[in-house]
Every structure is written in C-alpha cells, then in structure tokens.
Length: 153
Image (cartoon, rainbow, N blue to C red; front, side, top):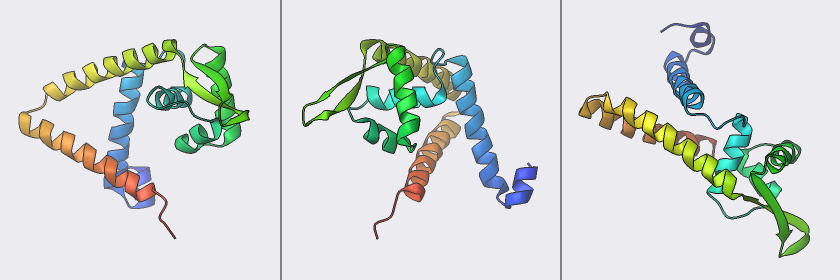
C-alpha cells in the first residue's frame, strides 16, 4: 500500500502497521465503547482501576500528559462519579485518586465487550494465523515499550 504518509516518511510498512492498529482500536472503541468518556478519560480510568490509589502527578506521568491536563481529566471523572479523592496519609496536603465502584463496573464491562469482539475476530482466523497474530502483536507491543522507555544515563 503506497500512501502520502509512506512516501513522505519512507516507512510504508510501519505506516501500514500503525494504520491497521488504529483501525482495530477505532473499531473496538466504536463497537464496545465506554459511554461518553473521552479516550483520555478512559485511559486514565483504566490505570486507576488496575492500580492502587495514586497522586495526580503519578497518574499524569503514567499517562504521559501534563499535570494540568490530568487535573482536567480527573475533575471530569470526579464530576461523573468515576473517581474519588482522599487525603494522602503520608502528606495531608496531597490527595490520592481512586476509582469508584461505578468506574470499576464500566471498565470491567467495556473490557469484557472488547474481549468478546476480539475473540470473535480471532476465531475467524486459521489456528496458524491466530497464533502468528497473537505472537506478533505481543512482540510489537514489547518492542514499542522498549523503544520509548527512557534509557538510564
């Protein structure tokens, strides 16, 4: 597949992979979305559901956004009843953010719907293609994480 992006970057294969992954992500969000939450809110909420309570600065760092951006996201989630703030027992000036039961239910049901869709799609592949897809995507995810992980000085 030749595209403007591939011609401009000289990395047609990488653009094709990125485009395919974007289509998968977009399809899953559309078909098994997470209500009216934005992509950023959903991502932050997923981190909070799968982690112990944390400070806003830690959540911002994990999501690779600025503290003011995360503050806006958390304020919206708090307004929607998805997160709660409690005093940090180690520092009374700071607060910890935790997912509420409603958030846990939302993320659990969204993940379940998306997993069912993915399972249905994978079941349409031959056993060899399914194994190759699972292995390739796992390897690609690990490689990308290693690529962007800060290196020690």
